[in-house]
Image 1 (cartoon, rainbow, N blue to C red):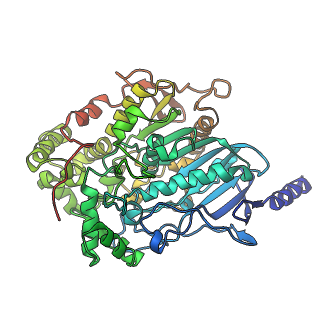
Image 2 (image 1 turned 45 degrees about the vertical axis):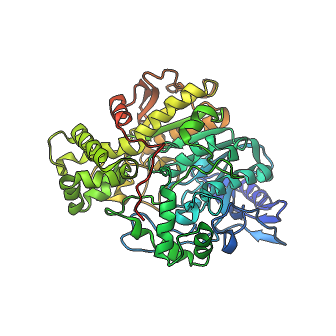
Image 3 (image 1 turned 180 degrees about the vertical axis):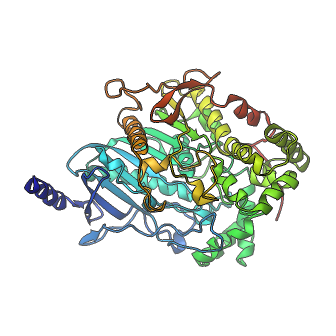
Length: 555
């Protein structure tokens, strides 16, 4: 037995070199959760470094290299500052357009899963999400770095800096996958995108972008769609943000050519470090530079029209799996409840704070914003003061505003458009012993099933949580989630009848009461109808004007 294992290891090491058009890569052999060997290629360039004149431009092809490139270490994350950092602490590099490929064998033709990380388009990296869980399965996993913050999403609204550079980086990575993944044992004709939060929204944006058409075959959007208010900039606001950034860095605000040329001369660190200047209440608005609708006439536009229009007209006919976590809003509630002064602000100054924190300040007149705030407060809190006894109502408010309403509307719109492509909807309500709310706020407070909690089971969490080990039940949840996600990547069905003995996950068929899979625990997984319909419809009823709006002139 030892000899057989040794021979397998020697064979794997010999296969840890692949040759691409760019040059040869040396990978390394790693071990999966169950003890299975796989090959990792880390820090692989998929585009040219976006430095100097390439800053604020669409990604350009990576150049080749001579010899064998050492691909056994992760590349630096894209330069960023954590949203919840107490002080300005900039990390990473502007030279960051690299991806990682993990494969059981390079001489196979396996289904490919491409992961786009979350982090609000301001933080995160592909290297944060290890392959050890998913590489128990016969799939090829790709994780991607893409530009973040103003370096990834600044827009002047014209051809000088049209915006969406981070999403264009992702498209470039998908083209790289099409051109190269066969060399790693992957099938370019079976590529599934999956991502969480901003990564989930990214997947949905690719489904409606002409730039990514034909580059993938299935999509998974976890707690994020193209309709999330935190993801898409209201019309015109991006140019205001660009001028504000220019002013902060002593650059001309007009014309846009001079603005962009000046910003190209500034240190990346200094550009990222301006983010505190965009915050109006604590860390809100949490995402100052967002995805934009680009001028349709520009060549290479990633998003040439509003997501609503594209969902109704040109969404790709590919299977889509999407859903939310029951306490996604703990992402915001946890840090708020860590500071008593923020809870007091929310209670005493709700009319001022809510429009900023819930992203309707820039899409509503002052009078309309006050009326919307009154409706929201009455719906969630009635006549009660906001405090410790209303913690879970605050979680619900952010869950519904940030995630539920956008998922509900996106599923309904897509259902009416892509009848031929199934949509699978889920509600993740399982809380194990650990939760990401421990990182966002008080680790001793139960905020429910927090934003990103499903990632604990899809990816290794030992680096995140102290003394982390799985219970038997948590191991079972990992097995179930990975099986459903991988089944979907292979077949377009998360629970194919020929390889699944549990509850069947059925696609959405009714726009009246959306069918969804309730994931409560390993033994509590079943179909239901009408996911929080009353709460979702409340947000649809508000006069938010999220998609076609005129910004306020603040500069």
